[in-house]
Length: 100
Image (tube, rainbow, N blue to C red; front, side):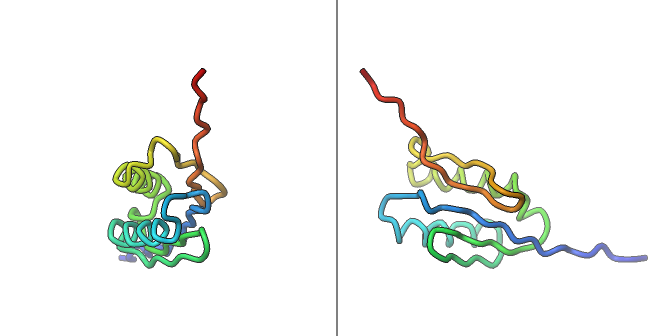
């Protein structure tokens, strides 16, 4: 019987638009992703790279985890998570409608 190989997956999260106390938020995002995925997390500039195996790193799971992070820091009103290239997600600023 052959054991299924676990594939190492690398996902990138472009958080360059994530604002607040900028440097601190990216670090908090890295720590949050490391805790939730159990993967290897590194950040360079505004891009956070997560390396790990299997289901903990599916695009869908990562999207939900990013939404939880935004909710936890009360940023979901200002930012949203969108898909980018194949192994990339992006945190993008929402277009807020101006009130008359």
